[in-house]
Image 1 (cartoon, helix red, strand yellow):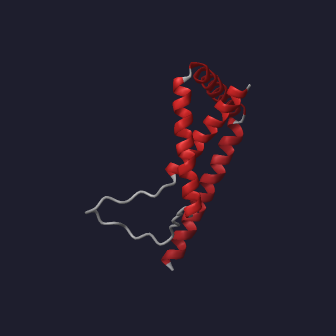
Image 2: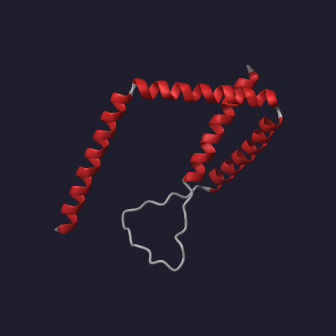
Image 3: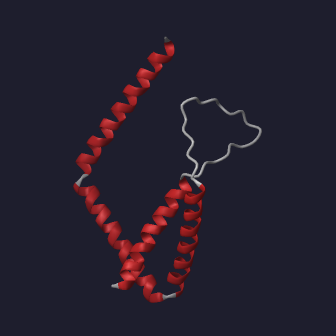
Length: 123
C-alpha cells in the first residue's frame, strides 16, 4: 500500500513539475522582429515559489531514480499509471457529450470576444 501511495505521489509530482515547466516564459529568437501585443500577461513566480519548484524538481528526480532502480516500485508505479490512463479513458468516453458541449460553448465565447474586440478596435 505504501508503494502505491508513493507511486501516486510520483505521478502527481511529475504532472506538477511538467505544468511548472510549461509555464516558464520562452525568449524570442534574436534577429527576428517581435510583434507588439498590448493585452498580454506575464507570470513570474515569486522567489519562494521558484525555490519550492526547484526543490520539488529535485525531489522528483530523486524519486524517479529510486523508482528506476527498484523493480518493485517500478512495477507499482506502472500499475498506478495504467490505472490512471484507464480511468481517464472511461471518464472521457462517459463524458464525451458534456466535453463536446463545453468545447462548443468555449469556441462560441472566444468567437464572440474576438468579434467584440475587432469592433472595439475599428472605432
